[in-house]
Length: 81
Image (tube, rainbow, N blue to C red; front, side, top):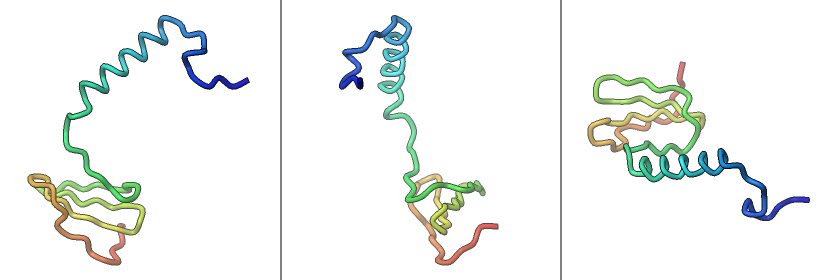
């Protein structure tokens, strides 16, 4: 039998404490940093000064300016060695 919600299951105090700690961590860190959104899985990252070169699994190489974060260059047909 599958439970439709976790409220119907027996939960230990340790489980409840872990869930509370995870919720508190999520609340603290949800606005921290500035993540980079990628269209596909990252394969390699090379930081060169203020630029970052990202190789993605969708056969794409991107150059990002780490100071202002816009996409600077997306050369078509690039291969990552």
